[in-house]
Amino acid sequence: MQRWVALSFSLPRAVRHPLITRRVVPYGRHFHHVANLRTPDELDDELRDHLTEAYLGAGPVGGFVPGPDDGPVGGPGAGPDAAP
Image (cartoon, rainbow, N blue to C red; front, side):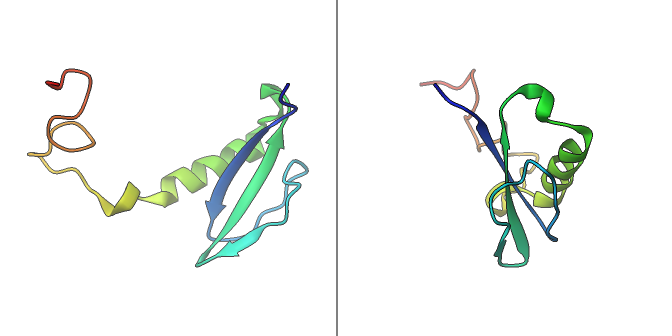
């Protein structure tokens, strides 16, 4: 039985929260954070704000920015309606 779920995110600054129990690690120009959540209710407004900031500051994955000819995210032919 799992005792918690590890929620990790990176920010351009180190933040503190009671559920961030692991050491905050610098990684390049960001800091890697891990919060251990035992229940969904532990995802409070402060953690949600940090997670939102991390998401909005992340940018496109792998530098890929879909263009008008790329189809669904993942490139041409991606998605549930793609031919096998």
